[in-house]
Amino acid sequence: AAAGYVAVCLAAWLLGRSGAGPPPKRTVEIARGVHMPLLANGVDTDHHVWLEAGGRHLDTAFLYGDWKQRAVGAAIASSGLPRGDVFLTTKVMCCPTLRCGGVCEGGTTAPVAVNAATYRNVTAQLEHSLSVLGLPSVDLLLLHFPCARWADTAAAWRALERAHAAGHARAIGVSNFNASLLRRLVKIAAIQPAVNQVGFSIAGHPAEHGGENATRYGCLEGSRLYGADDATLRLATARGITTQAYSPLGAISNVDVLGRREVQRVAAAHSREGGARNWTAAQVAFAWLLQQGMGAVTATTDARHAAEALDAAELRLTRREMRSLSRLR
Image 1 (cartoon, one colour):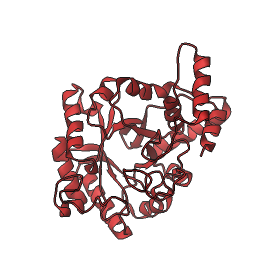
Image 2 (cartoon, helix red, strand yellow):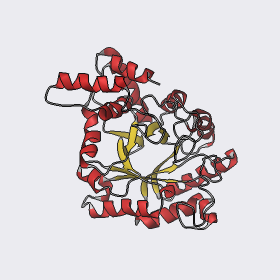
Image 3 (tube, helix red, strand yellow):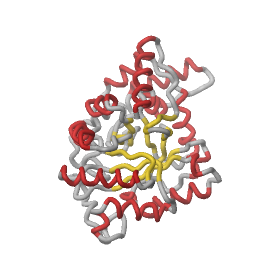
Image 4 (spheres, one colour):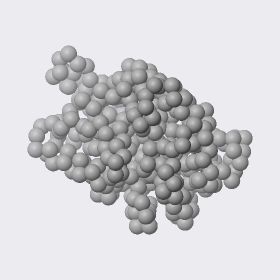
């Protein structure tokens, strides 16, 4: 994690010294000896396209359901790639939670058909997930969102620390934690979180909505309450915690990134300069994150979109472009 912080600082210094920043790195060391590819594919059920395009990071979660986690395990098994070549992230839930949608109740209407006790037991969720994935461990284990009570959140984090000690996860982190919660966590953690995965995008840090009834996925994605703001990013960077952005194109957090004129203008400007290469608005959105040392989790089963996302690491935005894109709301 410390190495990731140094890389971000170096990138910021270089960006201030020249018109364009250095090419964004494709991986970051989030913990000692644990190198995470910055671009990941998640949520979808067909990850073969991503792996065939050269992607080497898959993101899933207990909350996504057995069928989606099973698809991730199957994609890795059938890829022909050594297990160590594919970085795998999964997440476990902290229940009860403030998140909308009643995901902690268990039963037949819940995302995973297990008893309610499993939903309230982080260790049981992980054991279930590993069984479904068909793997003994993951590279990164995240606490998907904070519990409604701090005491439950702290207890869940201790369970992740035990999972790390047992060899079930090479690194551990959190998701949807705002600056206040992240600050409390680092004070009591025996193992510092390596990653904070939050909804983050151009014009979505935070999103315009306050987190109420924003999308069909839930109520809080893209809001300050769940860490989708610059204050949380600054704290994470200062603590050496890598920020990873889900909804980098704004779909889940209800932000129209690709429709912003400035994003389109930057893409067109680089396409004119590059001549033989046509950069897209989506690639500008990814590059804006990568150039700040952030990771991004996309979701695609389209070969063209997968290649487009992975190629974004080659796009170098200027200081002026980074500033103008950061000001969008």
